[in-house]
Amino acid sequence: MKRAGSPDRPRNAAPPTDRRAVLAEALARLAPRLPDFEAEAVLDRALRSPGLRGAVPETAAWLALTALTRHSFTEYDDLLNEGYDRESARHFVLEEMNVRLAEWGCRRRVSEEADPGEDDFPEA
Image: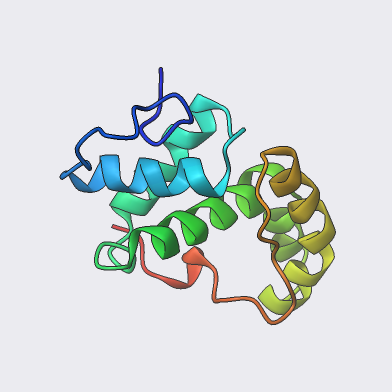
């Protein structure tokens, strides 16, 4: 599946008008090597989260991407289940998250002082 906003999208093409397509373009710019399966999961999360529905597309894509990375590609949830508080658990998975983001071509990194995670917003 070719994502909107991919490098081979015609430059003179009309901008997308539906929220999913706009988010897909923002996500493609943010993490150009993100596999399609994970991209679909990020888009689903961004669209499903009430806290992200009105967010700027780049912000919604970033928060959904970091939440997917944290919950699906690190031991974050295991750390929470072991009794670590969210701040400590996030600290311990920070490097692992940034390595994964770099693999996906994302230049932005998660830091200790980063934006609140998407999981700070209520789920639908």
